[in-house]
Image (cartoon, rainbow, N blue to C red):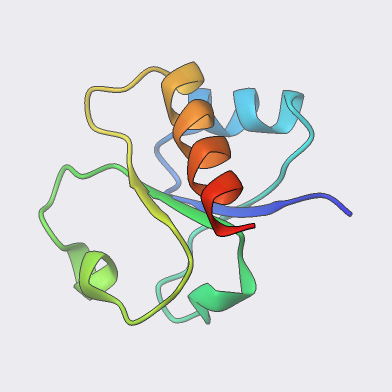
Length: 84
C-alpha cells in the first residue's frame, strides 16, 4: 500500500518528487483528519497556519521551509521508520 502524504498546494516540487518515490500525495485540506495520512508537509511560511502545527495528531508534520524536495523525503522516511 502506498504511503499517503498531505501537502500544502504551493509545494509542487516536493509533491512531484514524493510521487516519483511512490507516495500517494494529496493537497492539504485543513479540515481533514490528519491521522488519515502517514505524514503532512507544510511550507512553514506562516507560523502555525490554521493551527496545523499544533494539531493533536500522531502523524509526523514536516516543515519544508529551507529544505529541498529530497530533504523533505528523507525527513518523512526517517520519521516513519522511527514510528514503525
